[in-house]
Length: 106
Image (cartoon, rainbow, N blue to C red; front, side, top):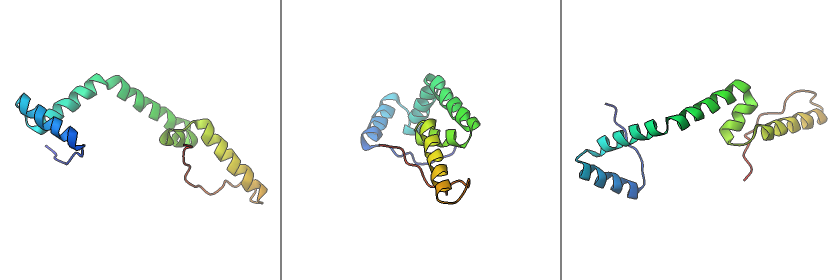
């Protein structure tokens, strides 16, 4: 069995400790069971998230970037287009603008 620390808040750690003691389990056994139950109960949501990511990856770079940043693909397309226009106005022709990190609007 692989071991590694899992960081949780102090109140969560206390809940795990008490629940494990009351259930007669070790803390790791309780966490293993809790994770297994969570994954089983939320399998549909987890699968949907994987499908959404796969779909974004299959649609190309802009869709993948939008998915990773949690913004719309239209926002990424608009930014990419504006950089293409500004670079052509600056005499660079159709060369794409230098890639820079895109931050979602807050």
